[in-house]
Image (cartoon, rainbow, N blue to C red; front, side):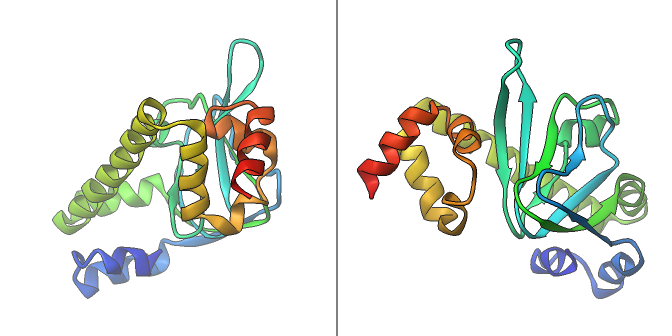
Length: 186
């Protein structure tokens, strides 16, 4: 996590060093939850290895995957993290996953005591917003096949590992349609 913050080139070394006592490590086994619906998000994580899936349960009781996050990406139930209100999403490990974790309280303390950390927080929030907007636009402008091709281009090492039903839900297609897309591309 420290290297990600350092790469932003915003924090002086003394500010960056404040992370040393704040970052903890966490391991999730495949299927373990980082957070479940109705809990309050108390941490933000950086994925060191593995992948996380965010999903919610719709009115018909179906799981709808709305986000899959990979190595060197941040993840949290962001709305809950920001508001400190219960989340409507579940975040689950797709594989054995190693995380670096920083608590909400520690982030807030960094923000309160440093304009540099406030800027880092703003940049991360902006990055999350851009990711969300790109996802929305992909559903409005791209076909399921094009969304699959984009995911394949950006994360080829995971595309075969993610269970078909999660991948189909994430792409907004049925598992049957996803099978046809995969066959057409191969």
